[in-house]
Length: 240
Image (tube, rainbow, N blue to C red; front, side, top):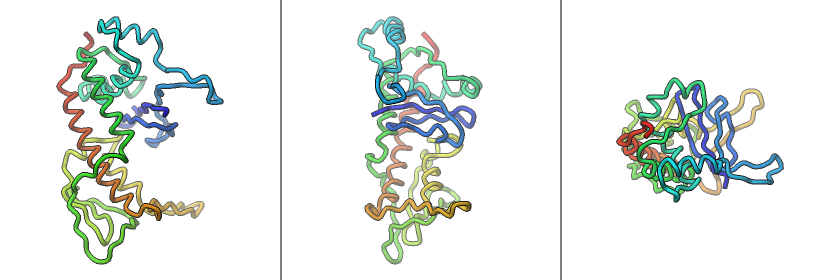
């Protein structure tokens, strides 16, 4: 598994962790990827992207020889989600690579970073949020184009199904200029490319309920991310 942190700073700052080789244009423009492992172009000579020097610096600073390179990787992911860090260094994040201060509570930020990374990579394994389902007419899981209500508490899945009870904090978890749920609503629809005529259809014959399940899972991911980020907000980021 090639766990990678991908960030984009020119639009509203965004960060996401993925387990595959990412598309650097994921956010609609080039971003920056920070993989845990790097390798040669032919896939050989895999090596850790965090140097032994950096590991020694963290261990020396915090006086803890048990700190691992994965701890540093998770700490970085947690810190890049920290509201105070993102506000304080907003201007810097638009024009240069993120700089990582050594915050007072390394251990807790690393723990939250690990929880966030697991949540974001394993989003398809999360439990569905208990949205209320209102069904009318004939059972049909097919999606042509979903739509949120004006107050964004309901999602019209299709003519057969409406999902209600979307909590407001869902929209606090944003990937760039919109929430994760709004990304799903926008991307999971049938569309035809005007130039090629190729039809993009996200519906799965082998798993008809995949999209409705994904909506519930993304709501769970969003709510849990907001909860963890709020916990991060209580921790300082100034270098000790």
